[in-house]
Image (cartoon, rainbow, N blue to C red; front, side):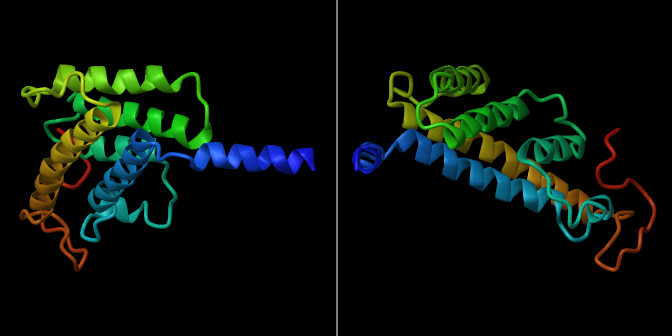
Length: 175
């Protein structure tokens, strides 16, 4: 019965409190992934049609979306998503990770370096608040990018919902 008691104690420890930072990172990751899916798997894009039915990992989705960018392929904001994914994987796969603090700090440091305007008092706030703002920052970038991609797809020369290409640039080919 010692094993069962140990398991009960371990369960009680894990559910004693809500890990707000983990919750923010996991939910933020899902929101980012939904946005990436919308960008990549939009029905009117001929190149992503070849990806339909494929299971892409998060990192692959970042790479595909980034490759679709005309102006922002080299934008360091993409690295924020990569670091968030590293942190999310650390949280997802380990209850007591020794690397979590360093990966969290990597996200926070990059966000502070990239953000042109940092909300007053954000430095020094609780970890989950800063991570939430960093995720919000990336989602804002991704939203703007998504609008550009969708506008580009409606441009003349882009394959319509009927699949017919009417000349001009094609999705996913950066100049």
